[in-house]
Image 1 (cartoon, rainbow, N blue to C red):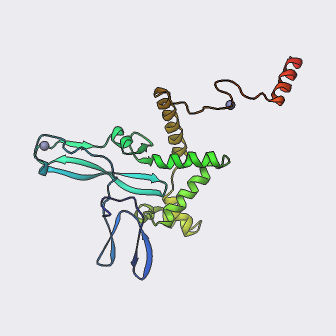
Image 2 (spheres, rainbow, N blue to C red):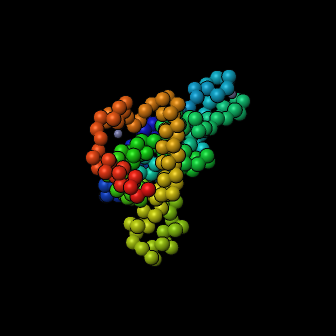
Image 3 (tube, helix red, strand yellow):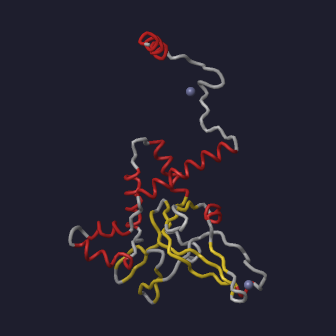
Length: 231
Ligand SMILES: [Zn+2]
Ligand SMILES: [Zn+2]
């Protein structure tokens, strides 16, 4: 089950403690062991004309997937054929069709577009919300669900531990980059605006001023006179 639904949160009783499990861990004989989990992304059914039995799914390079539940450290799936050595790796189009937004063309980080939708909705409801605050919330969720990879942070932990508490150390490691998030969010917004233009979707229809102005603001008139006088 977890092989296919890698983005859900899990926990288990290990060594007497009930603790959350990161996606790349499995419980074997009541002990934790590491495993490779692949990003759920659409894959072609065949990549060559050989028989499907020779097709293999391999873990590709490491990638950080950022969803509304924080960050997940997974691997990109790659397909290869044992018979003719044809290979396939996910491209930008596959990622976008599967609902992700790559931060860079190397796919070191990919965002679930749902996280941008949520951020946008929250900005609409609470315009004062900062990007930093939203990311702190995501970082807290990463930490809460135990998805900070210890392996990744070991070299830095002992060093940083001297200066700060352990919890903030863990936070440093699983952190989502604010610059990258902001940039990708704006890219996503810009592309959505272009797409809306192409499909002729009007996102800002104001019933009060289109097609005809229904109300005239008294205050507006006064400002108009003042501008005229001062000019
Ligand atoms: Zn083949
Ligand atoms: Zn209006």
